[in-house]
Length: 331
Image (cartoon, rainbow, N blue to C red):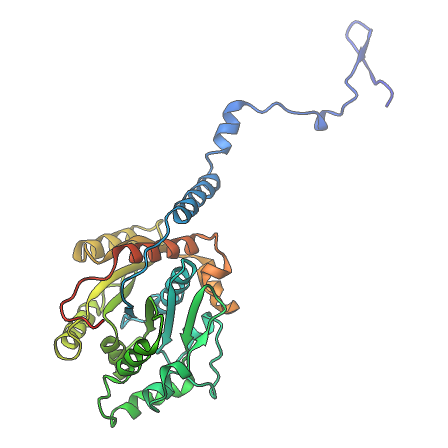
């Protein structure tokens, strides 16, 4: 490129740098680099890396006996199924042997775990109503590790009515599950039962079959609505049908740190249930909502997302807490 001459005040020629001004390197102050490293995105990336490292560095203990959780809340849309499949996937990924029993006629847990649940599929309906062995309806999930699922089909929608006339109608799932666990050479470490958002005979069967209750609570205005009634119902079942039942875990879900309401609800729940509430809170996350449409948990769909990390941390906290000691509990 030829030199470019510009007239000077003295009439002399001035040599101009041939590099165009817009392409010339611009020095960046050190302060600007420091500020860039402290942006919200950079802090989030660093936080996720730290949390992943902490999870990888500490293997989770396995329980001495099978821990059977019923995930329940009479209020719909609080994340029961999402919590079920993601905790199950997280624990299976850590090396535990996990079974999910889908007791919701909608079959969302079956969908999220990628197992077949068409109307002609052998399902939990055949176990509860038809006395089929539980082992005949269990399917392996492609999700992660040693994870299996008992699917739900549309036939389960009529099970509430059919159970009314059956003998020992509240005990049918428990008997099938106990028999299956006794026949296994290596029983499951964890069993998660996903309930419908109601207190019918299906949910009662789940409570009778379990030894622990996990209640997901949404960090929104109606979170505590109906919770006292749910606890009263659990207390009645504990008194009359299952003396080893215990509300061991409460998980705060759909948390939005930008709102004062979410912070207030979280604090209220912690004040009322200081022993049961997990330290981990599940944030609102687009990835958590997207995962079921791909037949996956968020653990498998996007392992590095905030929702995935939170469920991995919640699973680790449950594993390390261990099962509460209850006298007379079945082994």
